[in-house]
Image (cartoon, rainbow, N blue to C red; front, side, top):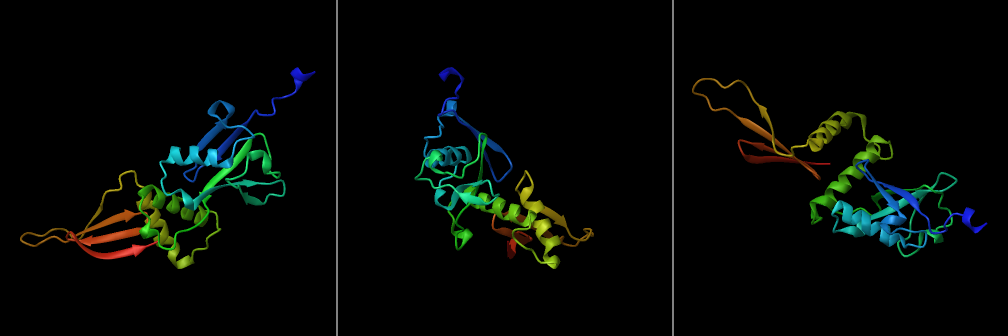
Length: 189
């Protein structure tokens, strides 16, 4: 009868990333129920090219629909409330930096941005009504494939008159504004 029992080490799960992509976790990729959560985190960090890893973690929903953080020092089987297979984990920011502009890596700042964007869209981070259009515009700028400057032409150039050029530069921490290639403003998220 042993042939009808599933392998206790069989594993299938997914990690949902902040940009809505998925990483599939299987025994073929070296993940088992006896694996430490740190091993899964390492695969996620490697996939995202994250260096500043201390801010991030993995969550799961238990049978009461409560989210819990996985303990990296424990194995998957030691998390008693874990539901599966398939096991679904949510990658996210566990600890926020006091000043995101002091983060060294662009990829870290981008993951912070994705978490804030997700929290605003899902209503977990309230946004005052009067700031919603501005925040939406800034997010649209940040989402552009080409993160180079966005040019807004001022009035039509008239003969013999200098044209004023404004440039917006979206960054993970906000937007910078240039007037005739001189920095004139910074707006932080």
